[in-house]
Length: 252
Ligand SMILES: NC(=O)c1ccc[n+]([C@@H]2O[C@H](COP(=O)([O-])OP(=O)(O)OC[C@H]3O[C@@H](n4cnc5c(N)ncnc54)[C@H](O)[C@@H]3O)[C@@H](O)[C@H]2O)c1
Image 1 (cartoon, rainbow, N blue to C red):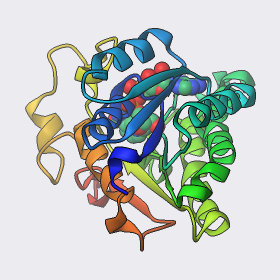
Image 2: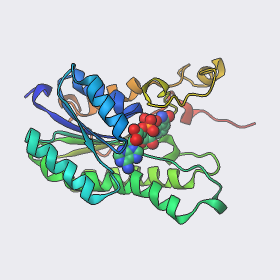
Image 3: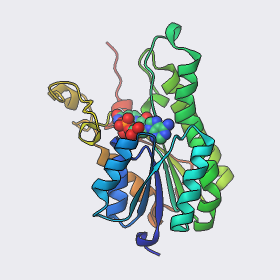
């Protein structure tokens, strides 16, 4: 079987890294379901890529089990199979601990960590049949921090740990891996331009041991590889894709 017959679900595929991942997968023959909470972004992305291959938008809140269940059920009803799940959807809440409400904490954990659990739980029976794979997107913030990022960092640490736990529970049929991006500039891939005014500075790039800020394609190419038959000895692994930043000592 080649990728022409394969079906991938990409959560948060309407914008940013998820959108670039959808594009790479479609260009490599996958049918892609964009499971996205933002209707405008999901519809626009599906429309934009429709001439390149088979792509569907499924309005989904990954933190809501009924919504996830329907998205997986509809995917299998239409395409008969699932070969790849990319758990990419995430949100953050940067706020000092004293003013971080329980509701905000719960929503960040709910989307980033519980969403990964729910999508995996409902997709797993279908991935088992195809001997498919799961790729969870964590963050280098699972490994290091700036102040006031407790909910996001904890959620991504959870995604990293959930990955090795799932790799043992779902193997050998399903491989489960995790990628932690560093700074990835998604400004050309988002509905709203989020890049800071003036774009990226020389220093933004030069501080990276690789000499540049990351691009969404740095992520999507690794996702494509990890899902491929070339990677069948890789499971439970955590890949850091950050241009070397987490290897750099910064003592003043
Ligand atoms: N861009 C970076 O520098 C960077 C760094 C580290 C980690 N990451 C991780 O990479 C992944 C993608 O990041 P990005 O920068 O492309 O983010 P983004 O905000 O550009 O895109 C995330 C997408 O997820 C969707 N989404 C949010 N909540 C959802 C929900 N409940 N259900 C379904 N979809 C939902 C959003 O609508 C959006 O389209 C995330 O997991 C993020 O934590 C990104």
